[in-house]
Image (tube, one colour):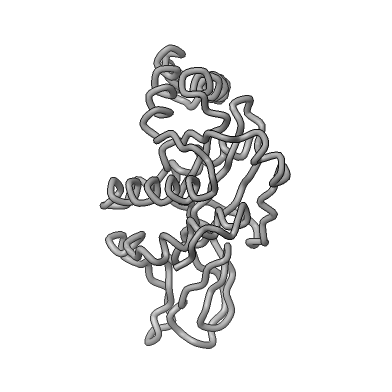
Length: 235
């Protein structure tokens, strides 16, 4: 499965399992190849966990900032509604992505829809590539009062503890219209589980408090894109 296929898949799940978080080398293709071959980028709609109550506002915030940063880097950007229209049209023409008898997800249809949607966005809007993005939930290891992952840090809530907690990260991947992956990166956002200092037990951060800190949200976008060029302003 391609990386952007995994981004689409994990966006439907609120918690995924993974190994210890390691530093990512985002350049699947060189920076020179990216700027040579990709001039116009179409945004795919960002995938947000369904449980977030203010999902629409989060989607609008991240798309707006991604668009601005990519334009700062010199790319022409096509908004996600264009890709979404193409993707949905392709999905409809394929009869949907789920088996009509079993209701199970059909990966072959999914891959075919993605392939044709990429080609169509290139033909219809002169896009050279598509940027896929998703808010992911990752288990991360911590020691002391601070957890660090994907370039971000956040207070666990109590000193002297170590273990594993859950955190949000923004994941992005840039692919060309022929399904070739060029760039993949993640930027940490915030913890979603912390430790109560009195009881020493974990608790979940309320959903209404997730993805509401504009500084943390902006920083995650910055972290994913700044390796392309340091012209992006950091708050």
